[in-house]
Image (cartoon, rainbow, N blue to C red; front, side, top):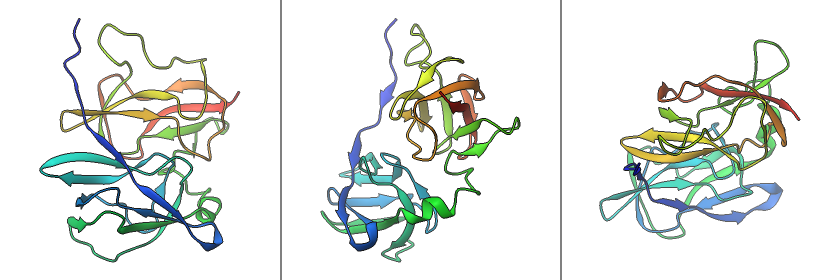
Length: 201
């Protein structure tokens, strides 16, 4: 069976290390930046930090690998569509905020499960969740499976485009054992909803 799903193009922000371990993320190209994260939000490595519209085409914008932290500063422009140039500063990530926000971690994907032992990996944005890459393909992960950092857990559909949901929360264990899959296949999720629960492998 042919898979007719359309996958959205992606761009990765540039990174500039600053004093104190902070990382400044820069625009990888000129365009219109949309849906930027708010100050205080957690950004995961390779996590989404909005969209960049380039010549009318929407590109999902991701943080680079190795860049994670709490949004500590931006340009202060709160417009829904912010014009940016190549190399323009978008926001600053403070890694020290990770430890300080560990107790309030629903958005970060480290919510403690109802059994008091497992941890939840949560949806990075709202959308429809798919457990398999195509209707005739097996699920990305199953209960009892051991997963590691960067592994694909499913697909998230937003406006008829699909993006991979990767196990990328720096505060969840790796490797980890999947103890429960909470999200239903083709079920609608809001940002912060649990996708699955894990425990250290």
